[in-house]
Amino acid sequence: MKSFPIDQFCVTAVDLIMDQGLQYNSQLQYCNNQLTLDLLKYHLDLYNLLSSDVSYLDVGNGCGMLQWINNEEGNRVDLVGGDTKGCNDSEFFSRLRYELRVENKYKVSEYFSKGLEITPERYWDYLLFIRFGPLQQARAKDLRSITKFFEQAKKYGKHSIISKVLLNENVKQYIIDNMKYEENYMAYIVRN
Image 1 (cartoon, rainbow, N blue to C red):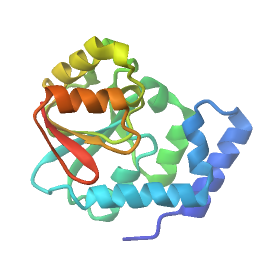
Image 2: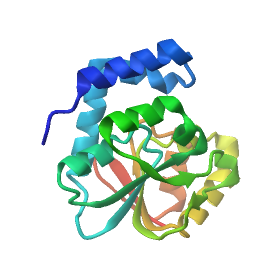
Image 3: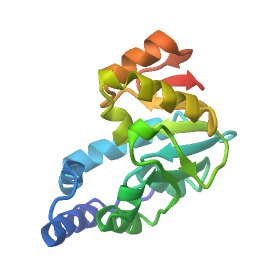
Image 4: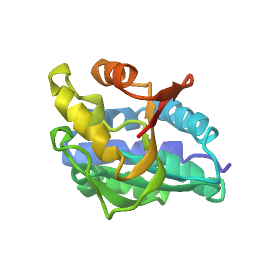
């Protein structure tokens, strides 16, 4: 795999924040070489678990690290990215995706309370929720929203892979109490 353009990537992130101001706290992680390399390693480990004979939508993919890895690996996996309108329209994330030469082809509903909506519609074997902000931020009182979210996931994918990193305890407990799942050291694999 070609070397990740870490220096240029982080410099671009810093320049964008300096020019535009900080829009999301999550932008700061991309300014630090070591944090960015750690994120890349996590995505590479996850990528190595993906199969080439099924399709994936990376929901909430931000700057597109998983897609970059897939491109570097010759598009071994049927993988596309999608994110919220705020992230898709953000110059910050758009520029970082440009640096990595990846794009988001799908839009995902912005607010967790509205459930899950993905446009344009398609059905995937797996929905990847690796770092999807709305799912990470769900509160215990959002049990109805969590239920609605996973009910609507059935419309878009056969399974969901939900990262254990940054996983909200409320969502984790909901998965354990209410869903059929398998788990490995990185994620819960949920049957939608």
